[in-house]
Length: 287
Image (cartoon, rainbow, N blue to C red; front, side, top):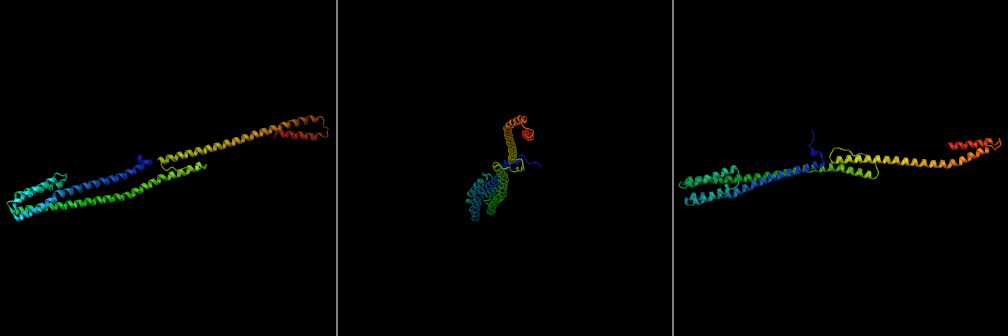
């Protein structure tokens, strides 16, 4: 399977790993913010609506028990204000349905003042609804807190392998750099280091290929320089030999000329010796 283009470069892999880590953190942060928002809404609904309704329900129970019908109206109006406060807040469909139920229950209480038994029954239903909603929203708040804690712990746990992956990625990226640094120092010292192995075609691979080409070029330059130096030494030796030959031939020519002149004056007994001298001169000239 062909890897994505961004994953074939060192920069792409590093940025990809960083972006994955940031995405995990942003996702966890968004979830925590959502949970905190739900917790805040639940607490606001409990504090502004259902707890006041529960307290008013307890007072209405006392009023119903005493038959103090005159106070029912004011308590119902106070309860309507608490319900309206809850309905004005951004709540979900379930909570809105319970608030409508509470409002309907208050309407039933308002029309049941003439019947003491019915009034008490309606008040008890309102108190039961308020207490149930307080318990439900408290449980929801606890659940949201637990979920946020679980997500935070999961992020911490996920950060460990992600950190190890980033550490391994950094190590794998820096290891070829250390090798290249060592080879460059050895090349600078005049050695001929072995070529750097190329495992991929990312930035490090391109750098390694460039180093191998440079090392090859330096090696070729050194060979050419050695051949030129050898050629210069041979040329110098040739010049020296030519100079020596020139310096030797001049006296040899003079000696050969004088030997030929003496051939006419030497007695027959000295001719063999003179012939030997002439032959040796000619042999030296042929060298």
